[in-house]
Structures are given as C-alpha cells and as structure tokens.
Amino acid sequence: MSNEVILSKTYELLKETITTVNKFPRSFKFTLADRIQNLLSDILEQLIEAFYTAKNFKVGILQRVNISLEQLRYYYRLSFELGLYNSVKYNLFAEKVNEIGRMTGGWIKSLKR
Image (tube, rainbow, N blue to C red; front, side, top):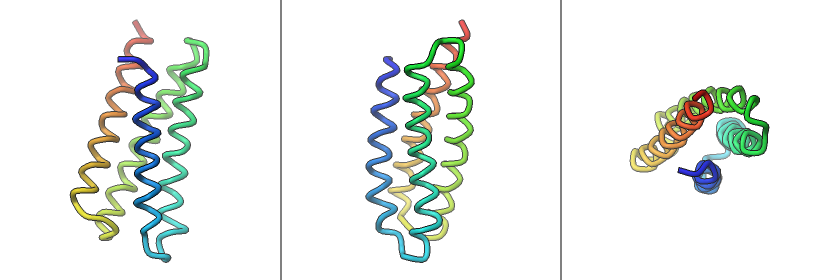
C-alpha cells in the first residue's frame, strides 16, 4: 500500500473529527475538543514530514506518530466516556486510528528492512 494512503486516511479522519468536536458542549470545546483536533493535526503534519524526509530520518518521525496515535486513542475514549458522542462514533474513530497505526507500523517495518 502506498504511503500516500496513510496521509489521505489521516486527512479524512481529521475532517470527520473536526465536525464531531465542533458539536461538543462549550465546556469541552476549548479544552478536550481543541486537544483532540490539535493532536490529530500534529499527526497529519508528522506524516507529511515523514513522507518528504530522507529515509534515515523517517523512523524517528514515525515513532513519534505512534506515540501521538496512542495519546489520541485516550482522548477519543475520554470523550466517549464523558458522553460527548455515541458508541457508533467511538468505534468508527477507534477503527480508523487503529488502521492508521497499523499502516504506520508497516511503514516503519519497511524502512527497517
């Protein structure tokens, strides 16, 4: 699978996340919603950086992406547990984050060969 696909999937997740977190109550909009949106934007930026960086620097960037994805998982779960969206939306987010994580791991493995 092309590494461009991971960028596309992350971009689509960011779009969907923005529309979801914009519906958060005001009390969560400037804390949890901003944190989720910024973290996912950072992940997209790191993936773009990895895409255009020399091969010997990509692994470090992609390892940071993996850490950021794990942090994002916790924020999505927290939002769900606070009742900010339903289980269908949570499962969708979890599935997409896991897919991006698998793709990132595959990219790292391909670089280590």
